[in-house]
Length: 178
Image (cartoon, rainbow, N blue to C red; front, top):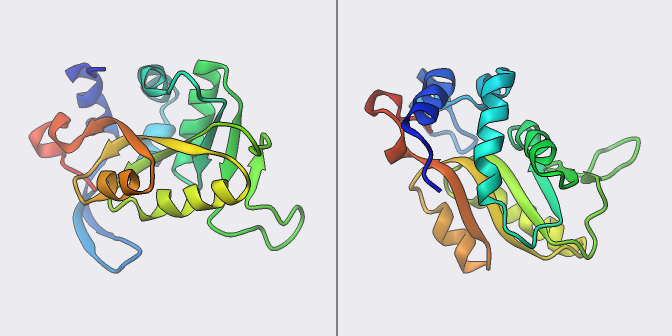
């Protein structure tokens, strides 16, 4: 699917931010993609989810949002597709339910991962493993923005196909983000 330049421009205007941003590995970027700004705009979130429906594999049974950036996207995409959603924590909750996977049960379900930005693919791969241990076959992942930092290749090596709505090349030149 080709995303309209207008939608790419609107996503960039809302969510691509200039300024220092520290990644978990300590790398500091000069600009970044702030998914929370996208998620905070209900109209834009609805439009992004509608555009992402074309990326959902036909055999998908559950959409699994990765905390925290993927959760609002999974909810909006669930509303747009009618597919149930699950929510993934980086680690099991230490109290209450003590669950790492919340929402719709995933065992035996074909689950599609949903996240905001894919860089190295390490987070998606870790969540793929969690879901596979829980008994859910995972072969696809969706994201709003893919950065060409090896994520697609890493996921492919583990049987997961990445379906991005946008890549850096789709963004306006001044909208490059992490």
